Length: 246
Image (cartoon, rainbow, N blue to C red; front, top):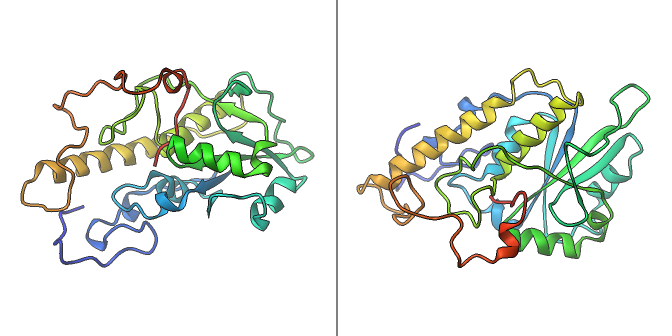
């Protein structure tokens, strides 16, 4: 990747980044037993600097993205969650959510269902609204994950140190599913974090380069003191296991 001329704005129609910073060549896509359905809020779809929801989709061959806010009458998602070949669950922390390590998934055999894992790609505020409006999503079993380390998404302030980007959430989901025998990743999923690290370093370089216009100079970068548990964030949010992000 190299810094682009600000006047040169042609975009890759796959990763939606400027052609000069296209990351398609960095992506190592792989198959999963689990089918991932990423529900992207329209505000996330317009973000091109990183957009980890779209990157997640490009990394996972058995995934698709649906864009919207209220999915109650969405024909595609209703077809998927009502398909008897699928066992649908949604990643959404809360009191009625079960830790993925304790959730009893069906074994993946020819006569068993394939897991359909719904992941919301939005900020907490928008994710909450999407779930509230979508009656079909509310009916799905909810699961959550407890990450073992801080988010690597260092270029964005998070309301809590263990809030995760969408691509990190997918990584930890696969890690947990691998441990219970649902997946057989064989380490392939680690490329997702490698991709995120590369992009974060690139964004850091752009932010630190004063000759490049258009980048936020007040972003959460290494060297800038920022307490992710700042008191300005409500305590309720800090008790969440995982937060959604773009």
